[in-house]
Length: 219
Length: 311
Image (cartoon, rainbow over all chains, first blue to last red; front, side, top):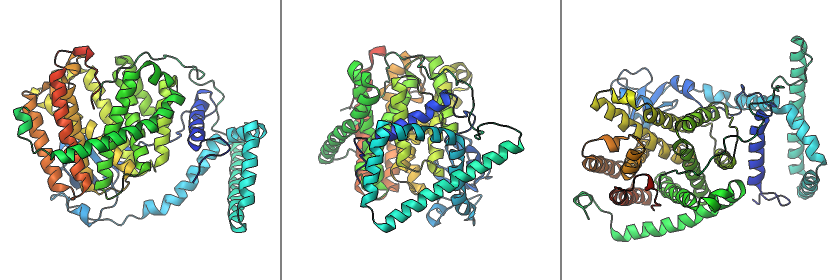
């Protein structure tokens, strides 16, 4: 698929969005106490039913006393095991597959909540940016291209796009209703987005501590 | 050739030559992937620090060789997308290492805190062009795969924690020196194992999500081997900067390295499925071992100037 759109490179646009998201925090427009993306999985991994000792290639039950101290930094939480994995099973704790559909069951709900949390966190910024972008030269160019693309799609594709847009619109309304209810119940006459802070960020986004020559040695 | 090299099972010359051809092709592709990013986000790197830029290309090329082997072992082709992922990951590791290694203790500690914030909350304040390039690379890398996959996110955090532990050892050597020698060596050995092992773990998971557990262990072991070899090659440089590693503290390092190497190769040979990737990984490890022994000898008296580019 060609990811170029009226002179924009898909990667460049992604880069710009990623960099902009970070600058929102510096500008105080995003709450730094709330995660943008949390990769840290230590807490969940510690609660997994099994631990794979990657250094010794041994699969243990999480509470197994035979996990060597030297492997504590090389443990990976494992939730599901298959027959091949069981060939690596510790002889003492003898891990067995457990029925754990919990994660699978919740994944779509989690995704929904994840999407809502992003809208909640960045909702007002997105609306503000959307208004600015729609009126900019680039925005107008993109609008023309999008119209061109839409004129080329068939009825079924159009319907799919419309229903997606309707869903997004519905979600936005849910968020707005939620925020209205939340702020009313808390007696707070804010802007409807509890995630946005009014402070000026850490250093206003100005580069500080520019680096001199690097001497990374590995090669 | 020294006695140490001669006792190892040497891959045949024809395959080593094939390996060189693959590496040359990967080097070209790596540069095609990274050069536009450097030009857009940190042009000074190529213009003012060409040696550093070349080193980044070389390290990344090595990462693509390992990635190529990993993908093949897992039963998948090393296509354009996987080459791009390997390129981004290699550059990401190189720049992250430079933040930690090149600006002194205070800056290294601050970066560790900032990386922790990045991994626990996703926030990273971009303060200069080097950081901008790093962040763009990491965001492109994360966009390539489902980084919320439980195994991958554990591996990414594991790589960070291994790096953090290395920094603590580096700057709090007094604590380590107060321990009995055997305990000290164990800690250093585990630290190198985790630093290297996590790199191949993250790389293989980025390239092929869902690799079997048994395979993970072997790739982890290969990654650890790369780190031991690397540390032996950098021995004089590390000692000059008071950086202690297992390889510059163990008695008779060459003998120790040869023993670890032979055990690792035997384990890979026995455990990995028969395929081109297995042959490639073992041959590349051999090549790396031999060239880093040469590096160790050549750099013996160069100290702070030991910053040559090695293939």
